Image (tube, rainbow, N blue to C red; front, side, top):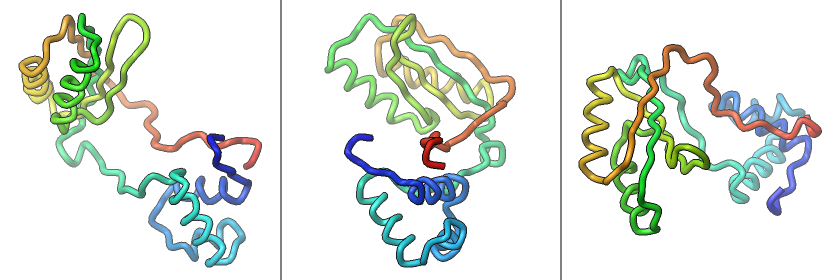
Length: 159
């Protein structure tokens, strides 16, 4: 696993943290049947090894006027490193873009955008196309969010 060894206890700790990172180390230790110090050392090691990247609060997009999810498919005629750097910079400057992927297949890039409404998306779209030359930009508006998880699947063998 990329030079990182994860055992059953690490997996249990990670499962707890993915569910809710706010409990104290003592609470997590109790849930995984470990002493507080041993649990703290394991969490620290997982952070140092880059398994735990950071701990964040998950926000309600509806309450923050970002309840519309738009998946934006982008096709381009450019594929040079310089163009990609410029495109990545343009996308990174758009806070409404919450995910950004280079794809294989029919489309070249896929963006996940969180906005209040279609007018807000149109403003994002205009800011994007004025910065970078693109062949095609298509948007698909999510009607309903059925599943949304930040949890990474953990090795089931270790659970």
